[in-house]
Length: 384
Image (cartoon, rainbow, N blue to C red):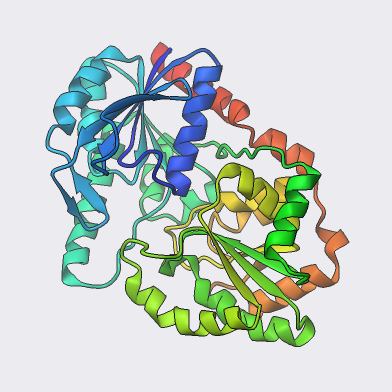
């Protein structure tokens, strides 16, 4: 099967969406399919064409940026050729160009599938309101022109104003999650480098962005420190020069720097998969205090659970599902630092209650398992 995957950003850009797309594309290749990723050349140093783990990546030049998106004038020309050459088209939303690609699927009789990752909510302001309206219109047009829409969970779909309009086209498929195995030496080396004897260790793995709820964990820390004076927060992810988040960073950093100086907070920066595999086993709990529907699941929860680490997630639709499905953690009230602190303290006090079944979780989210579900969907649509 020739599969065309279309999305605005692909690797080396790091986000939950790009990681999902990369894992799925590689799994398709391993299952014998020919996969082409059509994306944008968001960085001028990126090659226009390359092979990455058996996946052919084509990058369309960018003319200029618009908010967090990019405008690529030749995207349509390239899409026309590629849609005609492939058997099925998968688009990852949010994506500005999705309606045009879905229309080409209709034109050439190729099944067009949307994988909807999350809603977009830009900061307040007249320009961002306009961008939101444009994105909503584009998403709705893409939904009307597509054959099927895939989302992670029914919980998120039921609470999404966008997805709830297209229930007749919805299909839920759990996301692909994988991590390399870290040996004991790598885990121990990570501990020696970063922990300095601190216990317990609370992890957070995210971009330093307003929707991730960093301040909720920051406000919960004094409550946690009363019971555990040596507690440490390890923050894995980009935390400097995050696009559109400078004001947010400027507001929180003075307090964080104070905790850093006291040995209660440490930034690790962006970790590669091997480093993340050593990161999780050194945690006692992972916090996911997300604040709005731009977070639809929280893949890091599954990565943590695969390593036997329980999680505390906010009660957002979709985000609360990993804990509820697998019993490895607690759900805290959205934006409530006291609830977050109490949930973390409960897990730290009785860790054996939240062990779960890491082996079963690993199998359920294996990219090969997820790719097989997509295969069945693609084949069914091609027969129609």
